[in-house]
Amino acid sequence: MSKITVKDGTEIYYKDWGTGQPIFFHHGWPLSADDWDAQMYFFLDKGFRVIAYDRRGHGRSTQTYKGNEMNTYAADVAELTAFLDLKDAIHIGHSTGGGEAIRYVAKYGKDRVSKVVLISAVTPYMIMDENNPNGVPLAVFDDIRFNTANNRQQFYHDITFPFYGYNREGANIKKGIQDNWWRQGMMGGIKAHYDCIKAFSETDFTEDLKSVDMPVLVLHGEDDQIVPYEITALRAAKLLKNGKLITYPGLCHGMPTTDADTVNLDILDFIKS
Image (cartoon, rainbow, N blue to C red):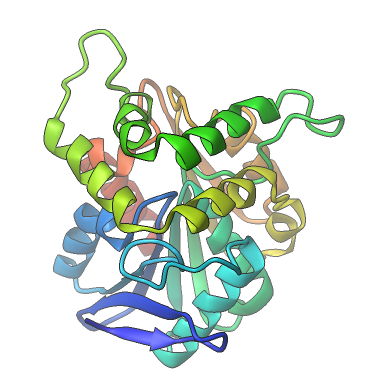
């Protein structure tokens, strides 16, 4: 397996396939690089170099007990992209990975990155407070924390229903997709996953979004039950200097898997534009 050891000794697993312009994929919580299978295969076939990694504490990377927050995640990506000498790269982040991607680009990536894609992303800010009155109540994330700490095996099955819209009437439920989500989640470390909940829900990416000059595509499903698009995608697009927004009626949080054909073509059009 391909791994690098970053400066604090954490081993980071990654996949690196093909040649051509690089596309770097940032996965969501609590998943792994494997969640990008449909995109890795598609863009590899289109002649791109595709890279995806397992965030620290996730997948095949070290099950870290510290450093499970956005600044360290971005620093890990910076070390990996420098090691791979990625230039003119497109960075694509889903959910938590969207926040990680924009933090990396804002802090480290401006000389290495050409475009960014945020899919179902947690940007700019999730939590309800006086500055974000329409946000998600903290109690929702406290419940996710409780279930991650005390009921992870069952919770990681149950959450796939709203994640993929499988709780909607007439949904085409695919147990293999659910099982693959559970498999990826259970590969990671419980402490890192617990800490990451705070990272994806309470990190404010407003200044990161404002500071990025390059083209950014924001994609979000309008039936996203995990990261509501009204408080994320709509706000993020307004903060970006060079943003483009596409929302999809009826699509769920996990649309890169359930609706890969649609999502992939829109990303390809953006890359070629």
